[in-house]
Amino acid sequence: MRVLFIDIDGVFHPAGDGSQDTGPRFIWLPLLAEVLAPHPDVVIAVHSTWRYDHTLDELQELLASLGKRPVVAVPRGPRSEAITWFLQMNRAVVSHRILDDAPDEFGTEPPAELIVCESKRGLTTPGVIDALRRWLAA
Image (cartoon, rainbow, N blue to C red):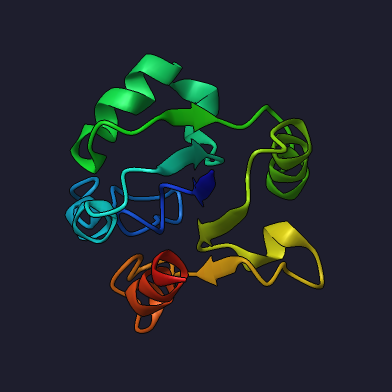
């Protein structure tokens, strides 16, 4: 099983600074839907703080354009630890990548699997889609 761990703010739409509305949500989700379309085996694992404020059903509905693939959420806790726990509990995972705009959430040595998005450019950050395509083709 392959898993794509996703953050939401700063990946699917610009991340705000908390003082203002960041505009439309999920504007870059269609980019990921297009890239993942030929790969229905990829499971989506939400590690965003959105998992605290939304039920799994709500997250699945928000991400419905990603197709009929499993959408899960990692447990509560710091992102890096929650992802590590998820991987330890799911030994069937053979490959994974992490989409996030906050590399500092992963300590001083972020994992090689981390694909960093710029907070204001998300999935449109140069190199992000190419990195995903290389992973999916491997």
